[in-house]
Length: 74
Length: 353
Image (cartoon, rainbow over the protein chains, first blue to last red):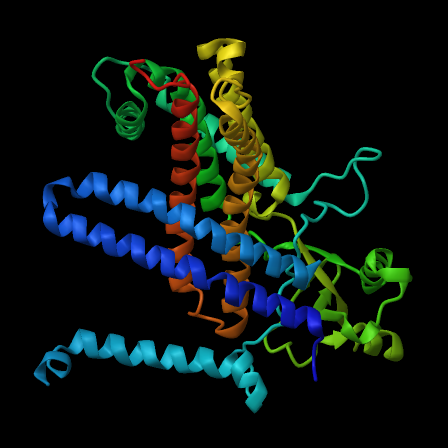
């Protein structure tokens, strides 16, 4: 088989590591949409805070990606 | 049906678009597997650390990296913009001063909403600098020429570097892939369709070189996006967190600021929470660093891979994504610094106690 167990590790790292943040970002966006629907006038504030919170959740996925990249390329 | 076919410009656009798509699909790495591959080229070097700007050392013991050159270019760009915006300051702005004022006013209002008017004046210079520097660095990184123009490292040097880093200095030569250039004196150009010609280091040594008029090696770019280097993002994160704590100390006094992290007043649980907060401060530095680094480095790897897989047009939507991500990451870094700074200047019991 081509490659070695390090490549498998890299694939697993990012694959499993993106599960949690994916669900988290989906939940965040869902709640933001709900809030937007209830109160369209506050859309600017809701949007800004949603983007900030999504960045926090995405950072976890980025940590997993960095681990995968380090395994693969270093 | 007459929606699409009744509109000649749309129809022509669709036909040209699908022809370009098919050409690039056949010419890229996928077509290479089926025998076409006339546009393909070996994938560019993807590696984590920054590479030296020029081979050898300009100053003894210190190599200048290509990401450092990019930070210098970004700084010069921002200085030039600042010079032209403030050259003839007037009460009623016009021209570049107007544009820059719109920008800065938008962010100052945002900062005032988050941190309150007096604190916003204190925090705003650092926060705006962080935002502008990161945004300019990210946007510079997607210009043509970044990552594609560079100097060619000879195969001997490539093998030497890999052997230095590998375990017990032994490297399997068939795993090192070299690119093949059309040699014309000082310059080498990766020709179209050269994915076929790409040799491994083993074949290079076996054949003692490549064909006439060609050169093997790896392309090391002259310029590379600044935040693809962990050192840059770590530096910005350290500066941001040091300033956050400095503002905490100057607002609350040494005792007041430290009492948030080492507090004996609220019993053992309070003490434990304080220790956790202290660890959290270091975690913030790490999180700042890797959020920015991961986003921009992943974007760079994505651009390289898409350019490799689908040569002409594959990269277009991802350039748009990179533009967006560049702004968002700069905004997030700046806003988080602002939020942490405003939190650290609030006394431990909250305001109003």
